[in-house]
Image (cartoon, rainbow, N blue to C red; front, side, top):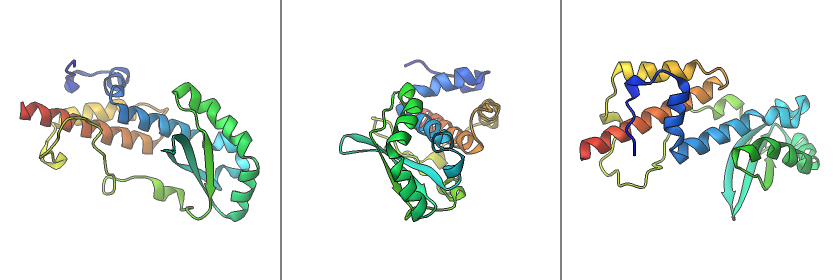
Length: 186
């Protein structure tokens, strides 16, 4: 695998290319992209009263879960489910994801801001096949230069929401720490 010197990156394109090889990051970006188009799919009437909150594989099918503000919104969206499914797939299929079903629920509705992950509650899973026994991300330090260059490249991308930018930054930092940890073990 080619080693990437993060301090030498000077464009968002090269940064994204380097990290898109990580399937967990790629899936996360695809999922975030699909969620971003939710308002366009359901229209102005429902964009603030519903939100795509989860995309998961269940029984071999890709299922999108949408939180709804109340039972009336849930019922109305269920009536338009086939149209919504067709429209969301117009956005997801080019990303290589075909959504088979949508589950609408008002029981999981929260203020949309509560879905945003912060540094305190973000939990990154280990997408690596290697044994990372002893890995503690807090014990691996990165230089201020590395972090600032990565942050600058990500924050200049206006196509991503602030939440997406933060999530991408956290994922890249985590990935870099894993890479440094693996190099220390060798």
